[in-house]
Length: 207
Image (cartoon, rainbow, N blue to C red; front, side, top):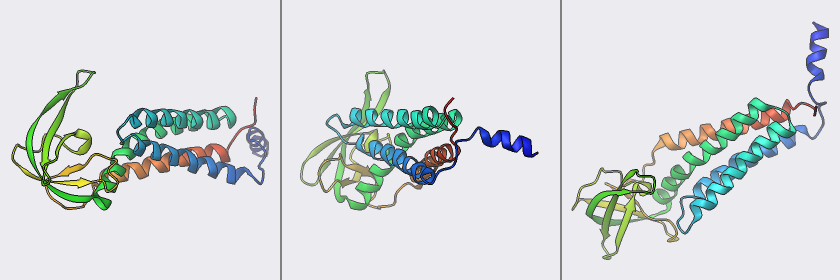
């Protein structure tokens, strides 16, 4: 047994005093960057593409660090895919959380509903609403217009106090947030960080 144990231990890099802090650094940095990039992608003015580029860079960094430097291919693959999935779920979840908790509630009326076909040929629901100031806003599924509203229906807009994000539309003024999206985000954050931390702690020497 001691011979087998010695052979297994020989495949691991010698433990050093800086291994745990270094592993923690990447285990926190990558998921934080992915989460921030997902939220950034919710902003207009081309921020979607910037967010996508940052997420791809974070996923590549996770793969390079865990797979290329620490030689943990399985953990590298898991971390890279979890990083991309994290950004995908974190963006909408944080968008809803932010505008519902910090946004101003404004009464509005649904003027019209319909669908819009994007460049991929996918039909997406859209809404046109008019708020109490007379401002007309065209909202999409990203703003929670998903075919659940009808023309002339009273709705409530949660308006970004900074004016950067488009409003979030709801049938009522309740600030309750969908816990599913936040739960998935937390889970993917943990998976990404755990995969990187494991790879860092169990890193192998170069071959």
